[in-house]
Length: 327
Ligand code: NAI
Image (cartoon, rainbow, N blue to C red):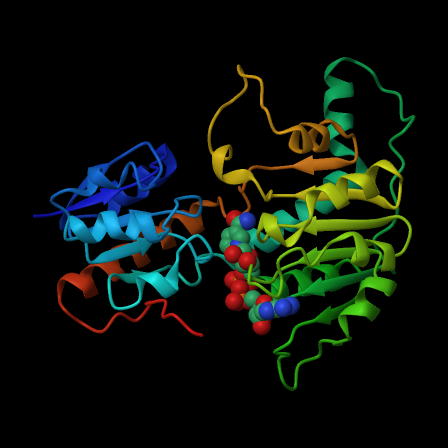
């Protein structure tokens, strides 16, 4: 049986891979893939990696030296891979779609929790505090949601917003033709939206798309949602806008410096990231730790497609889900 090194394993990953895998000897590792940990892939032609693994040029060199020929990402995003460097050295495959519903629904969960202060009410009622002071929200109905990125997830989130009776405007450099989506320039989206939700990939064009300048263009009291990638937001600028009241609230499933922290339990340590500490301390910030994808359906699909990707690789077939470097 071919041996596979499976990095950053969590119990919920193992559950589905163990259920569906019949062909491979999977070596589950509970630490992330980095240049230092790559040596654990000795004897494997393929490794399975996740969103916060570091697949840099150094890691690629280490893997290549061991004879690894495939990095199978069990996620859709691949901004953590140096694709340019990987070209002609190692193949990279991914799971392009697992459950866009999971992420879109989580985005709405963040918005509803934030707006109706469910997180506060939950704590209060457990302490028999039935006061309503400070729990006032606003109707979503009639508000304008600005959606940045109208791919798989953005489109579903648009439908969810419309279900709440919201007006939706969107920006995407590649708009869907003949759709019923109202596309507007980015400046107009910033200026007119009551809620802004990010559903675009992290690229050199989108890094810090939410920054001091764009925040200044927004309506007072705007709500920002990010279930895409942390580096889409300049966290310092967001923090300042939350402190001075420009931003009414932020629902964040991702954080620009999440790699060192997310998916692990640091509850007994002193976290050194002061921006993160300040953000999570604010009553109008809800942070979840990159959990938007985490549904049973998504986990099953991730395992199915990753095993399919591995099978194509070992059979020497063309890799349907290969991520190719584009200039
Ligand atoms: P997708 O590839 O289907 O859609 C992305 C859309 O963004 C495309 O329509 C593309 O044209 C657009 N886009 C590209 N450049 C843009 C720009 N400069 N400005 C605005 N839009 C731009 O991707 P999908 O599946 O909808 O995923 C969206 C994001 O969600 C990705 O960043 C992905 O990494 C993230 N994600 C987060 C998960 C989580 O658990 N929090 C899970 C899965 C995906």
